[in-house]
Structure formats: C-alpha cells, structure tokens
Length: 91
Image 1 (cartoon, rainbow, N blue to C red):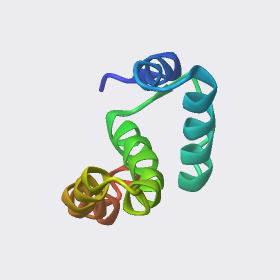
Image 2 (image 1 turned 45 degrees about the vertical axis):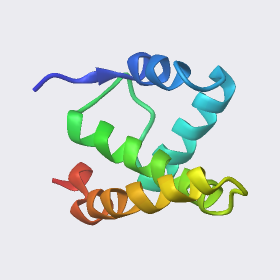
Image 3 (image 1 turned 135 degrees about the horizontal axis):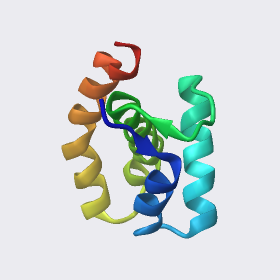
Image 4 (image 1 turned 180 degrees about the horizontal axis):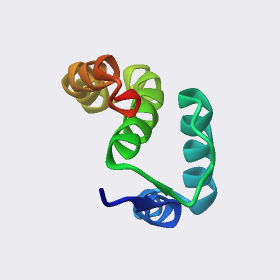
C-alpha cells in the first residue's frame, strides 16, 4: 500500500494555508486521532487526518457572518460526519 509522507501532507495544506497554520492543524489532528508523528501515513490515516482538520473548521464556518460560509458548512457537514463515523484510520 502506498503511503503519503508528512511532507506531502504539509505541502498540500500549505497550498491554502500559512505554513505555521498548516503545521498547527496537522498537529491538532494527529493529537485528536491519537496518531504519532511519523514519516509517512497510510491513505486511510490521511483521510482521517483530513477529516479531523475539516471537522475542526466547521465551527468557524458555522459561526461566520457570511451566509456562504454557513451554507458551505451545511453542505459539507454530512460528509464530514459520515467520514468520522466510518473511522477509516482504525480499519
């Protein structure tokens, strides 16, 4: 099974986030998922990491003054909930 390096994850997050914020979100996701910092992650762990990061951002979207942000949270919320429920990083 192919793995994804921690550098690739940070590079991907860095496409839309400040590098420090990307590292912070990755650290929070790893802590939340009880995953260690390591050189590479399985695809299912990467899905779990992405889901944890997206889930953490939902509060910000839901509380936004922008209707578009609230609409986005309403649209993606069910997908994030389904991914969390499947807990692919545990399989």
